[in-house]
Image 1 (cartoon, rainbow, N blue to C red):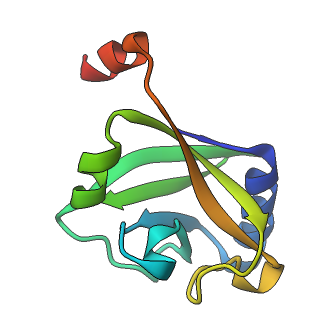
Image 2 (cartoon, rainbow, N blue to C red):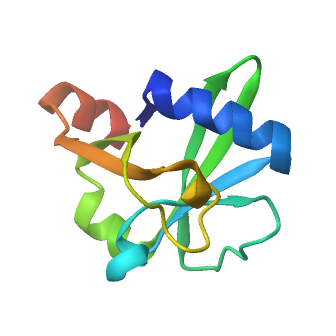
Length: 119
């Protein structure tokens, strides 16, 4: 899992304004198909959510990323990168007023990465 420098820069600004942050990817339709950024504590992670890890956004800061178990089953063989693109973010995601939205870019894991992940 990774984050682009552009997305990390935005996350650092959002963290300054909103405090510690987290992402959740539900796999639903519309807004739910994008990674949603929330202040920690504003979204309750459930027992069926998978913690994918923490993104290093620089300056000693990190942002946790969770995904619904059902969505994880589709994406468990991919390397994920959180990025931003121009456009309106999800209604409840913190980047909505910024004129950009978070997206997830993915690629298949290499054989070496898949083996390392399995161990």
